[in-house]
Image 1 (spheres, one colour):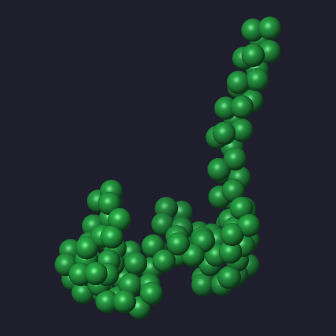
Image 2 (tube, helix red, strand yellow):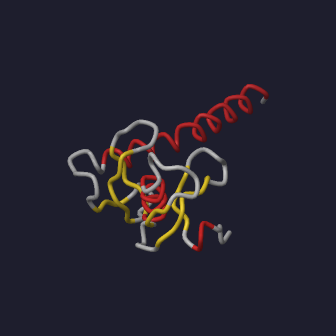
Length: 115
């Protein structure tokens, strides 16, 4: 019985680790023959846009919220905190640190976060 339980948990752990990687591979696969900005459908069925991944640089399908976040970060590339920018939705904003402090992104409402 102990051997069966160990095998079960090992398979379960492998599934948890492998599932996100498979979805990421699928999101790259759907953009394989497309150009940046092309429409796509994510592995989970959500519609999105083919955009360059921040880490790998490869095109992958990102849902519209992820795409807007990438555009808001791109609007502040090479800028400093407080510099003027234009958000992905066309609103004026300022470059502000992301919540985790990893990068600047364009925020409207005078740079004040609403969440």
